[in-house]
Amino acid sequence: MYKQLLNLSMACFFVLTLVGCASQANRDPLEGVNRGVYKFNDVTDKAVFKPIAIVYKTVAPVPVRTGFNNFFNNLRSITSVLNNLLQFKFANAFSETGRFVINSTVGLAGFIDVAGVDNVPVYKEDFGQTLGYWGLDSGAYLVLPFLGPSSVRDTAGLIFDTATTDPIAYTHNIGEIRLHNQLRAAQFIDRRTELLNATDLIDEASLDPYAFMRDAYLQRRTKLVQDNLVSTELTEDEFFEEENKPATGVTK
Image 1 (tube, helix red, strand yellow):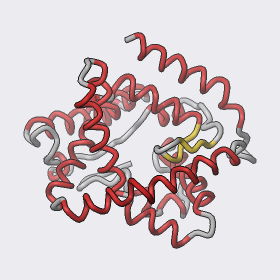
Image 2 (tube, rainbow, N blue to C red):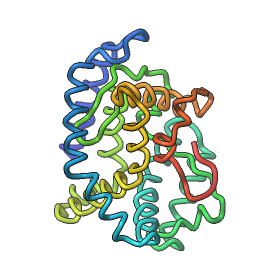
Image 3 (cartoon, rainbow, N blue to C red):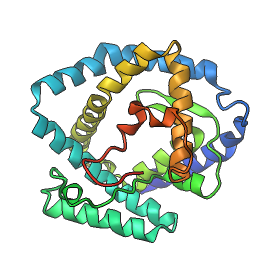
Image 4 (cartoon, rainbow, N blue to C red):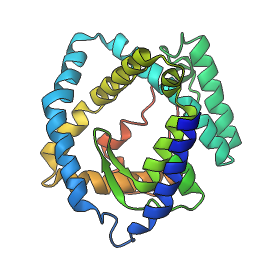
């Protein structure tokens, strides 16, 4: 509990001290540092994570990959429930609660997306979106080691969500360190496998992949905060639709 409170305090301090670093004219005041982290991520990904994802996609049957993807998406429903409530979107929170209950029971711990088959809508929300919904600016663009594109606001939101509504973090808190590490590794591989085609597309289509990813990320997050009311060409790119793509139903 102490560590969770410390993480939340650090997140709040992080936002309050850095959110003013960026202006509307310059969303990337830390570009030099960010490009260095981006290069590190890119080299590490091509040397380690991408090959692992390719092997996983090649070896694991589609039903297995789909099952694990459904499982991790189901866990994220808990985060969506809380953040829909924090935004007073009670109907959406009720829908996400229903999805979680149905998939966790009938769907065998979430490995089968029964709610998706029944066309139950998806309303994904995180605390970064909640902060934006209540008027907090995204702040400076950040590239996080291993995790990739983010912002001051979204990084604080990630810390909050991990400390409050992430079941995988809970396994660490109760001392199940080995289980925690196994679940995190599986979650990371699942996520990286989803993005195989998209990252190849970015490398091939853009003269400056860093700038393309930065601009598309910031526009996409603006779109999500405003409930998809912002229409831009970049936010329709396959790379950013992959993260929120459900098996069936409506997504935001």
